[in-house]
Amino acid sequence: MEIIHLDESNLEEWQSRTRRNVIALGFFDGVHKGHQKVLHTARRIAAEEDAAFDVMSFFPHPKTVLSDGRINMDYLMPLEEKARALEAFGADRFYIVKFTKAFASLLKEEYIEAYLERMGTIHAVAGYDFSYGYRGEGTIDTIASDSGGCITASRVEKVAYQGEKISSTRIRSAILNGRLSEVEQLMGRKYRTCAEISRGYLSLKPYYMLPQDGVYDVIIDTGRRRHHSQIHVDNRAQKISFTRRCLMDEIDRNEIAITWDSRVATYSDYQLIAQ
Image (tube, rainbow, N blue to C red; front, side, top):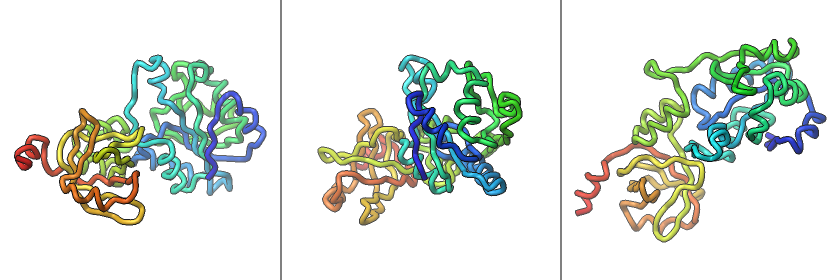
């Protein structure tokens, strides 16, 4: 899979390297079950049309840019992990559009022409709530008219769990409140983060979320071995420590992966046990 960081400086270059494609549009933070339905739909249509299967996302988050940095978004995964997830779905190209105020100011027709039509898109797939162009005036339902009939589109309706829409916002809330079984249901897999070891503690790498305070059953993956363990989270300090300190001596790398299974005790319970 090609990973292409797209902005005004190289847009014309990639427009000149066009080929027929079906494209999935969205932010795709977490690549949860709702996103997966969009991706499956785009991949199927690409196969039917004998076209490439591409994905277009945006970074940084629009809320951060449009608020002049006053709003800092919590991300579920960094771009590298998002790319790995999209590659697993069979995407041929992953376009990461640099979101700027200039990009946000494009008229909806200008976005369609520059970023889809001139990029070879024949069909676009997005969720029912996807929007584009100045003030989000364009939606998946206006792509056909905004392209003058050159691009067709498929609207993917919401995917729900227990009657409520699956969304990245809902997953962030579940993580912050330690509801990891719910996170697994929404994402279709357990939450996974990468962490660095420093001064006897673990700290998450950028663009991951740390669950609320407490003790968690986890799997630690060093790349060579997998350890079933328990860890203690101090969310305020953004620190993670092992409840079994000797495990730190068994880890021979400065970077590890943590797969989060379940929250087994609150912070107050942990303090009582420690005493």
